Image (cartoon, rainbow, N blue to C red):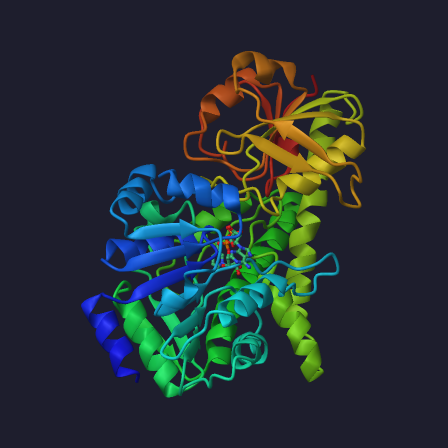
Length: 456
Ligand SMILES: NC(=O)c1ccc[n+]([C@@H]2O[C@H](COP(=O)([O-])OP(=O)(O)OC[C@H]3O[C@@H](n4cnc5c(N)ncnc54)[C@H](O)[C@@H]3O)[C@@H](O)[C@H]2O)c1
């Protein structure tokens, strides 16, 4: 291994750069700064950099106090250009990896970041890709861009892949955070892996080495595909349970009493976020190069995306019981973040549901204390783009709605109040399942619509 780099990592004089200060990059940057490293944060979003430099956090899982303290101490320097990338001893790449409209990987952010890093690459540096991507990206995409400088991997500079496992909004309650969640790493050469593992182990309690970046890339996709497939399985069983007049939530609770060989997954109105609906497609896209068709990935995606249509059916069924049509109905959607307790609405299941409701002539409002503005449209459901603003959740707004649709349940949602003041609730996440409150007609995903009671 590069002795100078080793020494700097161990005595914490190494300068760490983090490219992309989003949900993944910011906690990583802050984590290394907390360990005493000087951290340069590089993000092309100038307004984000300005807010961070002014001591304001841009994500819920990192506090303003932490950012302002580290910025004031000079340990965390957010920047909107790569000018100082050459000063860094280690550079993490944490940029987005979305897919395009045809669900093919969009690696343009990784390519741009690698190209800009290459402009400042010098001997002795370590580059670690953290963005989730298909097996082969580190060596087939990042490496050639860095080698265009004439520097050689494993000799002049070091390159590795280490996937991110953070679980935004869930960390403190589950007891897992960046430091105590084990991290996987694979280097292009053994020296690359040694250096990356050493650096990561300064912050993370357990580092698991694999033989190559491709194995590390595939590990992340296995983890996310595992989730996608299991969620699809339980979504399918939830729809079956509805027809059989069985409560799927009761069944999942009962199955969870088995202490081994079972892990609970829960049905819902679709999968959202930057990872589960996107990452498996990176693998299925790459698989085609090997004349291989990833049937489980496609099937799971199909079942999961059907859930938004199923949610619409439930809304229809509920409104039908009160003699109301979707057209002209006032629908209040509760929770548009892609999962509980996050301020992130990317790929939220609420998106297609709200779009379909609007397209069918409903008047839609929403309440989400973590999402001030919710942009919908621009899809085949609804061509027009619309920006909605979060509305207050009061007895009046609930009474005014023909139907309240719960899509995401944040921890502080007052479910009893919802039940007491709403006329009809379509509950996609079993938020109402354990409440004793009475009032609204409730249709829950995964239970028979027969629990609606007598027609009003
Ligand atoms: N969010 C999660 O929970 C999570 C978990 C595990 C892995 N991941 C993966 O991590 C990666 C990043 O995800 P995220 O949620 O942090 O994304 P994000 O959109 O929150 O943040 C990415 C940041 O990168 C910046 N950026 C884009 N191009 C850049 C460039 N060329 N140079 C510098 N900055 C640039 C953007 O302005 C943005 O601030 C993705 O590959 C994602 O799949 C995300």
